[in-house]
Figure 1 (cartoon, rainbow, N blue to C red):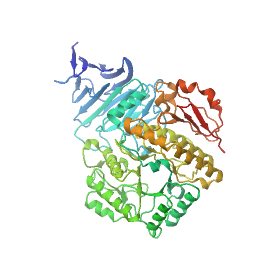
Figure 2 (spheres, rainbow, N blue to C red):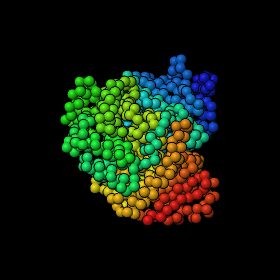
Figure 3 (spheres, rainbow, N blue to C red):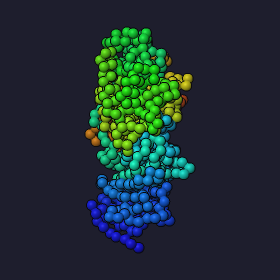
Figure 4 (cartoon, rainbow, N blue to C red):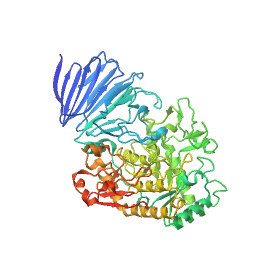
Length: 632
């Protein structure tokens, strides 16, 4: 059999006629060809970390070495090339100019022995993510199933990770009939990806000793670190939105009544004028007669000690005059049929248009109009909604590098929003972990479970942090009250307790809707959050400097512990505060997983911690002390 042994650019290569083996630093990779299939194995210090079947949708019958290119195999019009551009990692690159091909590489999840993290935000947010079922999921920000945050990043408990290049027209299959206990990375040209001159499947695999070290390696090379943190005032005091409580029934009188209620009950913070203030969506003009005195209303609210935020979005409905300006200047996203019509939750079918932020002039126009609005009415900041690619007419034809589309539209929208200051919030992102702004969880329902309810508050927090979005804004306490579901007093308090050690607290349903006891308990937890604001900011500064999650999973400080790796109902603030909220209806106790040997040895000091009748548990890992309190 033809074989050769080479040392090239720090790599030890062994290329046989139908296989490639490489070693570099502490890792090695082998790609073996047999029976017209390719198997991949990736190891760190001789411990196998990843195994895969690759090229499964390609005809692999005719294989030969690439002419003049090392560690490369050619299969007719398809090329497989393996390189190494980072320490402890290899890059796998499939390429072809035949755009009818599909590339599919499937990695074993080995879920009996391995946990996985990262992946997409989901409406039913399981954690860890190896049990998720994903079918032909386009890996771009999308509204369906709450896919607003989904970096092409899979990290496992063995310390290995996979990161797919942003130029890949990527779809994900996981735990489907054809991918049981596997995650498949699929590259093909289908909606939402527009036509291009080639198809590539390009991803890097890397490994370190454990999941913590692996994630920090991914932060260094791919995910990046935030450049700053949101305004301290948003961390110290709550945000108060009109949405869940009032929905669209708002006016000057309602705003003033709400603001005064907040102050009268001993609270303050940021006041958000949410949906349904515009004459038509996209006009940026306040409705009349509901807001005929909006300037005085805003000033009165500010005089009560609030900053004032205004909800906004990237749409223009067809009943607005600004559609003409947008069409004349090519400001709206269009599809392959040259139509600019789309739909969203505040329009009828095909009665809206979406601003195309891949056009740099759109960002300038959008920001300019909002700056004028802010100055005209004394508004301090904005709450930005939507921004996912799925709101565009499909298949969208956008500006810029076609291989970065359509996801770059989300990135450019979020970057435009972020120019308006440290008080803003967005709900989506794409390679925008560097921005110093809050990224909001998409709307939660007023339920208890992982089906977009209270339990998913914790798992979504973990998912976002482990995708590099560490400045997380939890959704409103008690959820949004959709479908005639409203929070009970028990749910409201449990939600607030779970939220207390997250970066900020948002209210819309309010404590005084229930009774004085709920007001008293709520005030206690808002004050507790304020007491820990410095700790939250300290964790944010650690994220800025080193890329650490602000609210990591419990395994972050014990990354080889199998029980810690499975935990989905606890989270941490920084590295020394463990939070174990009660998330089940009717429960007054819960089991707590305690961290590492040092914490485990302190159980006698914690007074039989697993049986405490309490509604929140906060373990200070440094002092090994527990704070607990009775429900009421």
